[in-house]
Length: 123
Image 1: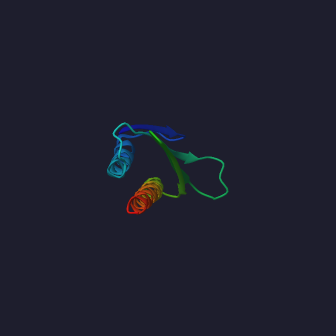
Image 2: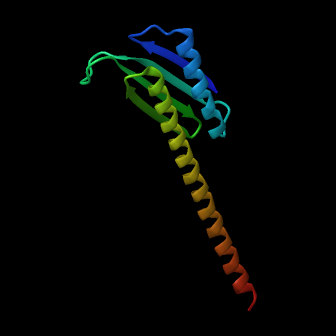
Image 3: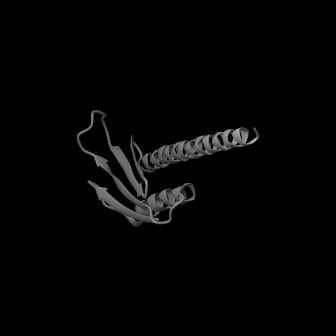
């Protein structure tokens, strides 16, 4: 998995970059394809309705047949990265469940068709 990290309105330090890459790298076990690309953007929101410093983390995950996006605004940058990772894990498991359900429905239809063909042959 390729991870591109970008910072807006803050300096991208080695600690922030390593933390974001470590958290996003854990998503690899939920992906079936090795050539996924994660565009990670971390930064500080300048025009926000909340007072104080508000940090933003967003991830755009692109893989063959999959396009996922997650955003989080928190008062702590590391907390925002953690929430984005959790949201993406939820979305990835939901997508996997949908794919498996579709496969099972198709297999059930094929089985029903085969049973129907065997029924007509018995006569």
